[in-house]
Amino acid sequence: MRWPLLYNLPVEYALLYEKISAARKDDKLCIMREIVKRKCISSGVALDGAAAQLSKKRLSDWMRQDFEHIRELDSEIALCLLGAYERIGRFVPQMKNVAEARYILNNLEKTAALSSMQEVRENALSCNAEWDYLVEMFGFTEKFVEQNHERIREFVFTDGVHITALYLQKHTDKTEELRRLVTAELMGKFRELKYYGSDLQRELDFPVTKNLKQNWMKNRSETSGFLNVWEEDGFVPVMKMGEIPFRTCLSYIDGVYSQCLIASHDSNKKVLYLSLNGKVVLRAALQLTKGTYKNTKIPDDTPQLQFADLTAEGHGQEETTQKQEDKEQLVLFLEREYISELPETMHKEAFNLMISLLRKKAAELRALLVISSDYWKYVSDEFISACFSMYISKSKAGEQYLDSLGGSNRVNREGSYERNKFLIDNN
Image (cartoon, rainbow, N blue to C red; front, side, top):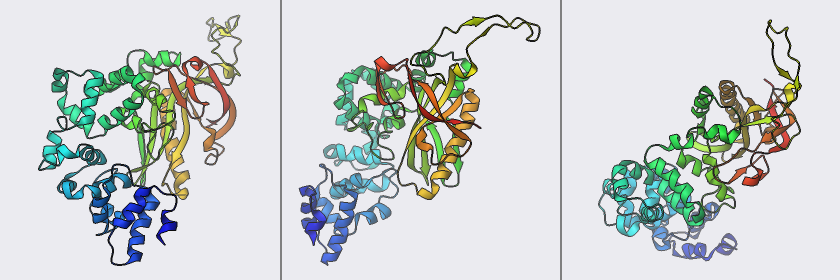
């Protein structure tokens, strides 16, 4: 009976099955079915140790009874914890999140010699191969590390070091961009870098007042029952956008368009996350840009002039023949959503909550709210489907991934328009 269950799976699944001890064969199959369904055996798991712990109870029971307090823990890391449980089980009750669990597993030989989780945290930099790699690649000095020690430790235990190291190993050509982003994060100045000077205006090629910039920088959130939606622009949460709520082409681990992830830190970009009972179940890219109803490929900055209207409140008023619908407008644009583990019966409620937040945001910005046509199944008469030319903003990263604007867009497409059908707020 085991072969149909394990058919076409890596050999590690068969090895784990053989190592599990259970009083009844049916119990053994139940334990293994759960592992197969979750597909959670990674290359780093110690099969002997994992089998010993799974022989006591199923993985779901471990996660519910012993690991429930470890935030964002997934099945793969949980199985790795079981594999090393005899050596590090004493740390489990004090673990706060998956980043701490992963840190211990990645530095097992050094951390296993420590006596408590507090000691692990205190030695976060001296027992960390990934941090050593970043120090070498970014050229961090001892003085810099000493001055920013507490923020660096926080960066370790929020997965910042792990994410950056994995990404950098794959994209060494992005070393300088990453160095600047991470340095700002470790100095507590990431938002200053993200929204630096007139970067937002240069990215949009559109006038940006101080008030507009401040309103865009402000992150809104809204709650309805067990649902919560919020804007996110932090370094680590944005780097996770290709992994949450599931892995996509922007994954910092192996995404085919992961080189575009750096562009998500441009001044005009954020991520919208939605959680159910505290777990993120939806994400969508959010950007501030501009657009026009006019069918155009490049901005039109040279409208024709006409005689002034002297009847306008007794004052001469310069006008153009450019129609209102042809003018460039500031746009708050929501790209397509990625959903996982959100009951279909709650999709409309989640959409309404997102739109409620975005309408308030758009009103603050005096921007037109435009959303991807992927949301057509949720909208009512409050949105109209129309052809619209959306501006591809300039990026500091050279290449950006825009789900609803043709996917990957290289630097030679910046400053042009992508014409497509979008849903436009008619409220």
